[in-house]
Image (cartoon, rainbow, N blue to C red; front, side):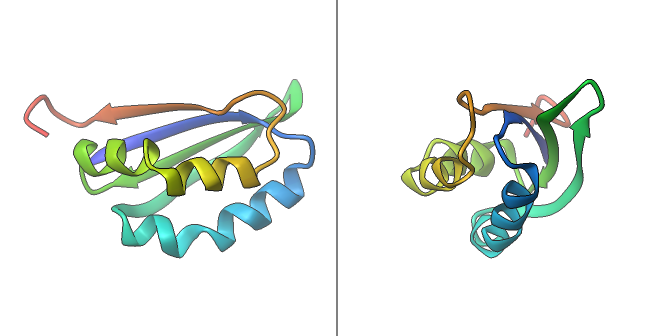
Length: 93
């Protein structure tokens, strides 16, 4: 199991969350297990952080580098490009 940390600055956080929810089934079909947390930076209300559980680092990398993920991120209407970090639970993943 791996974690995916996303940092994104969006113009409209409410619209972002709605879009993120609509995209969930596609992510889940490609390895997402659960959205563990999402929250807004208290000092910068347009900066959002999301943490996902993903089946493996390999599947996470495959998804987040795919055209589908690029399309999803484009739909977020981010102010700056989202930052996606894949975190491994262990070196053997």
